[in-house]
Image (cartoon, rainbow, N blue to C red):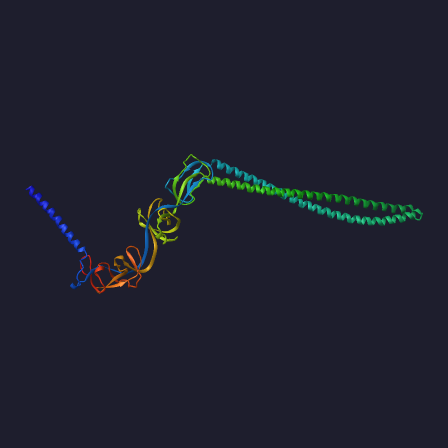
Length: 457
């Protein structure tokens, strides 16, 4: 009984498998395009059809390449010092201005403090020099005033002397006349003595004024000498002022340099990028110019491909392309040719460089890229599937399907993208064309449109 059950189960399995194979075979038969029928049957030639469409088409050539960074920057220090901290890791994305390396700032801070003190001292010296110059200017003003007063006073004395000398001449003449009269005993002793006294007084007055003028002239000369001395002192002070001003400027420059060096101790990213390599470690001594890190600029990347002569003829700087990556299957990156190298390698290929935007840093150095170079692009044109094209004796044709008839039409082809072909001959969009059994068709053939279900459409 057990054996019978086993035999029954085996028979059922075999029956199910056989049934499945039969069903599969029937489905396969339905999906095979029927053999060409004799037109006498009335059905005509079975064909599949497609429509002429209006649209855009691009001709592309496929290449593979690798992502390279557009630029790599060696980060180095402008000052020497011990590395206190390396703030980034290899592969880390950094922003412009982000701190990468910090050097010890102790000595640099001392230099800044010393420079600040020197600036303060130079400013004090400058203020004192300006004050001295102002005092000298005030002194010169007062001296000029004294000189003017002395000149006026001297002029007044000189005027008085002129009057006294004129008076002396009159008194002297009178004295001589009285003396002759007295000598001839014409006037008395008393009258002669009065005249003599007047004469002596006039002489004394002139001598007094002459002495005063001499003193005034001496004073005037002394004042002029002082003015000359002040002029020399002023010139010296003005030169000192220039030197002091230069000293202040020099002190400021030294302070700026010291502050710059202090700032250089904090090394930051010059622009956005990725840390590619860490060369120095904490505790080491950095020297000016020694590389510390390698920074890759990744806002834009480049892909290099190698093309042959035929493709090279179609390319120029600015030629567009589409770039895809296996690791980013849902994304298509726009690119363009930025450089065509002027050298052909040993196998006859020329390097071509394309630029891609990478603002979100998705693309990394070394990634494999699939490049579609767009060598031609037509926006508004007629398109037909490549299966609709029939070639005979060097001419290209389409079989237009209308009212179950096939009409052969010679056409001129444009560019192709591998699945579609541009039709340059004027045909109305929406026109149906045969895509199968071209060898069984002729102009005017009766056709019926075959579907997967094996039914006439």
